[in-house]
Image: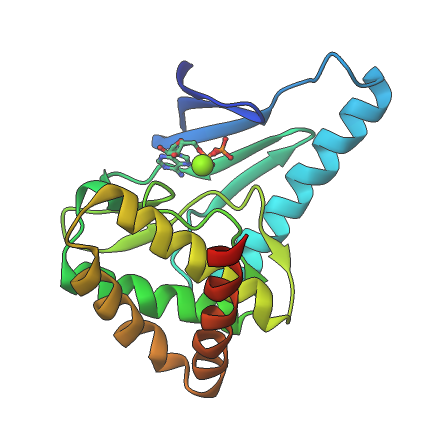
Length: 196
Ligand SMILES: Nc1ncnc2c1ncn2[C@@H]1O[C@H](COP(=O)(O)OP(=O)(O)O)[C@@H](O)[C@H]1O
Ligand SMILES: [Mg+2]
C-alpha cells in the first residue's frame, strides 16, 4: 500500500481490491486521548463519514463508492482525475453548483467545501470527496456557510473568481426554493464576516 496523503485526522493509502484501484482512508490515533476513547472516536467518525457518503449518493451526489468499512478505516473507490482547483472553468463550476445543490437538498452540509475536495475526470465528471467534517442538517445557515467557504477559497485561488462564482450559483439555483433561501442567508453570513 502506498501512502498518498497524510493529514491531521487521516492517512490515505492507494491499494488494489478485486482488480480495482482503491483508496483506504484510515483515521490516525491521537496520543493525547485515552486509547480506548480514541478508538471509539475514530470508529464513530468513520461510520458517520460512511453514512453521509451513502446518503449523499442516494441524493444523486457523485461520491466514491464505499467498498468496505472496518473499524477506523474506509475503503473507497479511487477517483481518477484532477482536483477541481486545477480545472476551474465556468462549465465545470455550473456542474459543481448543481452537485452542491443536491447535497444540500439531501440534508447534508459538507463543512470543507473547497475546490481541493472535488475531483474532475477527463470526461468532465465531478466527484465530491471528503465527508470527514460533514453533518446531517436542515439548517439553511449551515448550507450558507458551505457557500461562504467555497467563495472565499475561489477568491484565494484566482482573480477571475467572479465569473466562476456566477456559474456556480447558476447551477446551484437548480435547487429551487431552498437555493434561494441559502443565497439570501449567504448575504447575512458575509456581512457578519466583514465586521468580525
Ligand atoms: N476516493 C478518492 N479517490 C482519489 N483520491 C482521493 C479519494 N479520497 C481522497 N483522495 C485524495 O486524498 C486527499 C485526502 O482525502 P480527504 O478525504 O480529503 O482527507 P482529509 O479528511 O484528511 O482532508 C484528497 O484531497 C484527495 O486528493
Ligand atoms: Mg480533504
